[in-house]
Length: 76
Image (cartoon, rainbow, N blue to C red; front, side, top):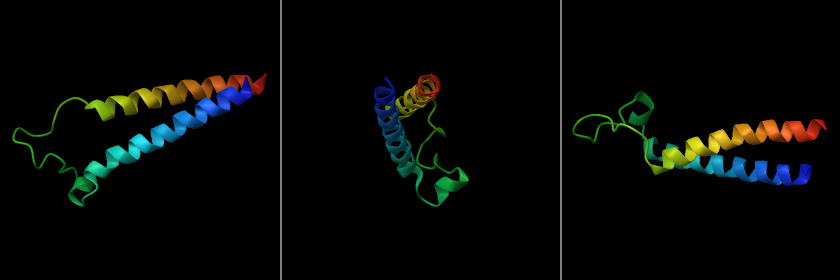
C-alpha cells in the first residue's frame, strides 16, 4: 500500500507543479508582478476562476489529502 500511495502522491505532485507553472505563464510579463494583469480587460479583473484555476485548486486539495494519507501509511 505504501508503494501505491507513493506513486499516487508523486503523480499528483507533478500534475500540480505543471498546472501552477502553466498558470504563471499567463502573467509572466514584468507588469504581472505588480498586479496589472487586468490591463487588457474593459471592466477590470475577471471574477472567478477559469478551468485551469479550478483544476489547480482541486489538485492542491488532493495533494493535501494525499500527504496526510501517505503519512498515515508510512507510520504504520
